[in-house]
Amino acid sequence: MGLFPSLASYLCWHRGVALIGPAASGPFLHLMPLFSAALAVPLLGEAVRPFHALGLVLILAGVAMAGRR
Image (cartoon, rainbow, N blue to C red; front, side, top):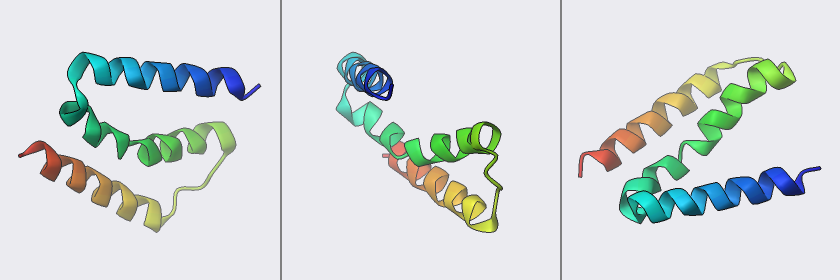
């Protein structure tokens, strides 16, 4: 059950890297925990805690700093 989604996400990621290049796609790799946490709230009933907000701020700040180069 988990094999197809994993394979599909792997293929989509590598296709995206091929389209926009590794330098432009690299910062998006760090957004995966953010999307995982965002999807865990409605799908798994996960509670949002203060450390989630701190992680969100740190991830977005890192991606923004990487994008300014």
